[in-house]
Length: 480
Image (tube, rainbow, N blue to C red; front, top):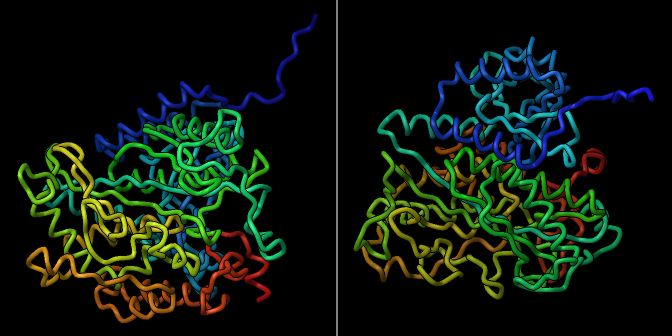
């Protein structure tokens, strides 16, 4: 009998092998492998691996949406140093009269993909947005974060670390957010609570599938579980250098959405899609190391952390109102800052009170860190980490010299209009982001806010979902 030859022989790697390959690539980033050598290695691999058909190059726009372009592999190998795209098509980037932008390839941020999620024969790499002259583009917050981290490392060997605890919801049906204006509600796939989920429960099946894909992509998973609210989930992965952590944040949400859609469900990262239950956060753990030592740890230090950690805390709290819009950048985010549901809306620090903007978790020499709890899951994570580290190192110090002053209760804004006003008035926010990006970001947030009623009230309004920056609604924006 004649042997049947497959028509397509695209790359299709088993999960255990994927994990090994992605962890090796991740280790190269940790080891700061020479970029020229790494680029040559990646190009040689792509050229020799005939089963790869396309390379997905992704970047993140100013509001935090992940943008992806698939390049034919042969074209990319010939043109990787001269990639361009229409920046005027990306909200918050260039205007129509100066639309062309360049796209560099960050060869270190290279991922092999689970073919059952992304399709066979593809790999993914993160891009760097450049202006027409090849300089870093100001609105590319990934580039801003990367260059700031490199500057710190070159200065004295300081390395910034981060880990995010990203919560989300699973709802019945595909595109549940886009259909919300028609239905007026989200339907749970599970009504269990914290840790309660049977092995065959739809929520558990989703979590298992997503966790397996993340593990295969080298996330170094730690734990995953249903969260407090019905149909809510959280999957944690290991601490990493800040840029790696931010890239994983974006891939995490992409994987969750893709896997949920394949199961006829929607993964939603709206901070508060349903009133009356807990919202979703992205608690952001940060620390700084040097020479293998955790600079946030001090034996006998107050609450187990060092003077540097306390300086970070004081500066971030002092700028809390100024940077609130960066950490909570949507109309819906301000529903989550509700004290009845463990909301971290108090501008203070505590080792135990989960209503505080910053918490100091129990830690040791390896794990000592601070946890910024007020970050929403729909934030631009690159902008958030860049802002937090810049503020921690360089922000204006408060005049709080004792526990009594630190503990006095102030609150974050409870609506986006106040957050925008405070952000626009802030000289520090302007200094961190630059005047152009600062103004552009405020304009984008106001444009979304004005498409929703000013008073939040007790019902989730169609506008705050329909015009949320992570909900696909290009058609609606163009016909508003």
